[in-house]
Length: 79
Image (cartoon, rainbow, N blue to C red; front, side, top):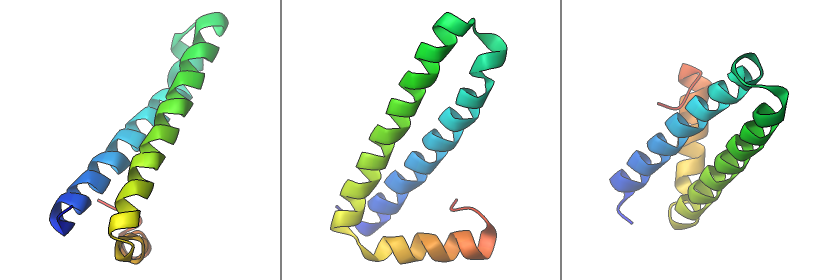
């Protein structure tokens, strides 16, 4: 995997995870207890799968972990 494409993939992962996380926190407000718990669980599983994608990218480009940590330290976020 090309390094620039790896960064683009990680960017997409962080965006998707952030959006799903925000949605997960709103489930209680907009869903019944019964369906809300299931949706929240599914969102958690989706975020975990995103983590698996990121780990696969880091196996190919382990140096990107430090690069990402540096961006978070400098800007408070990755992208």
